[in-house]
View (cartoon, rainbow, N blue to C red):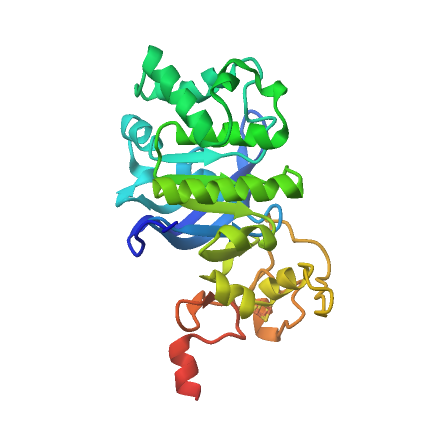
Amino acid sequence: MAKAVKNENLLEVKNLVKHFPIRQGIIFSKQIGAVQAVDDISFNVEKGETLGLVGESGCGKTTAGRCILRLIEPTSGEVRFDGKNVPSLQKEELRELRKEMQIIFQDPYGSLNPRMTVGDIIGEPLHIHNLAKGAAKEKRVREILETVGLSAFHARRFPHEFSGGQRQRIGIARALAVSPRLIICDEPVSALDVSIQAQVINLLQDLQAEFGLTYLFIAHDLSVVKHISDRVAVMYLGKIVELTGKTELYKNPKHPYTQALLSAIPEADPTIKKERILLKGDVPSPINPPSGCRFHTRCPKVMDICRVQEPAFVDSGDGHFVACHLVPAADKAENLA
Ligand code: SF4
C-alpha cells in the first residue's frame, strides 16, 4: 500500500515552549518557579508521514502533543497546521480545526466514558461538529466500527464489555469519525499486551495508507516507534536532542542519550551481542533543569563545556539533527576536514 504524497508540511512546530507556573500563597499568590515541561522545540511533520516522538516519562512529549492541539495553551511558540497558526485561532476557528486534528489517548480504559454506548462515543464528535445526524450518523458509526476491525453490532455495547485492544480500536474509531488529517497518537499501545500492540500498530498503518493520514506518534519506547515512524525525534527533559530518518537513527545514533536508549532494546537475534549503556541517576527535575546540556548529569561522554554551554540543535548532515557538543554541524565538519 502506497503512502500519501509527502514533502509538504502539514504540521510545523517552531520554538514551542510550555512552562507550568508554580505558585505560592493563597491570597497574594505569586509565581516562585516553573515546570519547564517543553522548552523551545521545533519540528515539522510532512503530509502522510509518521513522526515518532520518543523519550522517557516526564520528558515533555505528551505536553507537546497537547499544546499542538491546544488542549493546553502553549506558553509561547508557533504551531502551524496547514499554514494556520493554531495558538492564535479564535474559539470557532479552533473548533473547525479540531475536525482535522484528532488524538488517540494512551489509556483505552480511562479515555472512554463508561456510561455511553460505543455508538454514542463514536457518534459524539459527528454530533459536535454537525457532520451527521440520525440514521446517517448510525450508518457512519457502523462503517467506522468495521473499518477498525470491530462489528456494527458493537455499537450497542458499553466500553467495559471490550478487551484493552478492542477499546483502543474504539478510541481510534472515535478519532477517525470526523475524517481528520492529523492524528496525535499519545502512547496508544503502551497499556496493551505486546501481541495486541502489533495488531494496533498494523491497524494504524493500514488506516494511514487508506485515508492518507499523518501521525505524530508519541511513545516512551524506541522499539515501538521503529515499525511505524518515517522519522524519529528523541526528547530529553523538554528538549529535542536528535531528529532524523528512522533507518539513520537506528543505524547511526549520534546523541549519547539516543545511543543509551537504543542499547537497552533487546536484539531478536541472541547471537548478536551489544553493550548496554547504563545511564547514571534519575532524570533531573524539569523545575530546575541542569545548566548547559540538560543531559550532562547523566552523560557518559560529558566534557567541561557541557556544564556551561547549551549545545545548538544542528544539522550534522542530510537532515540528521543533533544537539551535542561532540557532533559538529555539517558545514563546520566540512571546514575541519
Ligand atoms: Fe553529553 Fe556533552 Fe553531548 Fe550533552 S553535549 S550529550 S553532556 S557530550
